[in-house]
Image (cartoon, rainbow, N blue to C red; front, side, top):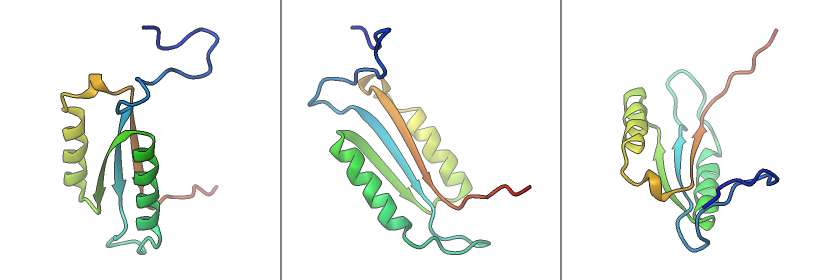
Length: 101
C-alpha cells in the first residue's frame, strides 16, 4: 500500500469506516498563578466532537498536574495500538505567552 504519491498534497488515511487516528486532548482551565481560562471547556468539547466525527479515538484530560501530564503522554506513547492508526493528534489547550520585544 502506497501511503503518499509523489504528486499528492496529502496522505491516505486508513479505510473509510475504520478508526483513523488517536487524538489526545489536554485541557487546562484552572491555574494557581494565572487567570481561569473561560470558554476552554467549550473548545475541548468542540475538538472532541470534531475528531470523533472524523473517526478518531479521542481521550481527553482536564487540569492535569505536571506529573499527571507526563504520565498521560507516557501512557499514550506505550499503547499497543499505534499500528492501527494512520496518525496521532495532540491538542493542548492552555495559557500562552506573547513574546514582546
